[in-house]
Length: 237
Image 1: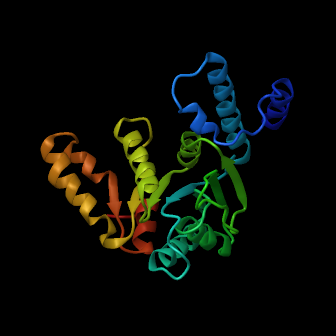
Image 2 (image 1 turned 120 degrees about the horizontal axis):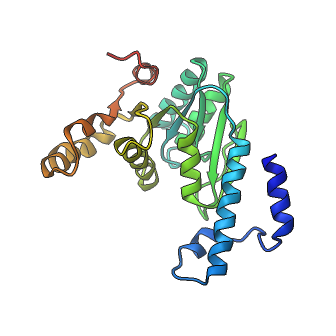
């Protein structure tokens, strides 16, 4: 039904052909109302495409992490083992669909016979879909993609990453903190990678009163895959 709606809208609005850098144009500043309306329709159609292709049955875990850790890196190996363990436990695995940590988690799930899903983003660098995806959706707008990465999951794992990973992690934490999202498990993996961030949280944010004491516990540390799975399942003490 959604596919038919998209086809009908596309026929009625022929100007909605693919446009390079559509999000960049939208964020370029003040524009005329017609241009903004066109952008709004594009976003709506992206949401419809996501809803149609990511209609997931059963529990799902989203794994965030950098595109820059190659096969052979310890973080890649951890994410691959995590994807395998999640699939064997009955979870679908959803990532940003690209290389690095995303590829590793999808790869582990795919190799274990689980459902492996990718929400890719069109970028001039880095982001090409990895070859271990059972379902794949490509988005133009970052915020639409982030909604899809959150919407279908009941737990989140944050692996080492850069600005994009931090953006995704803090998005989920903010949604939980403000009551917009159920308090699903948020698990941080990567050992000492997150230590400075935790010190900043405890040493700066908490004393300044910009977060509450209970907010510190939104993210749980896991040193290995077994511990991460315990936290995700709710088996942890």
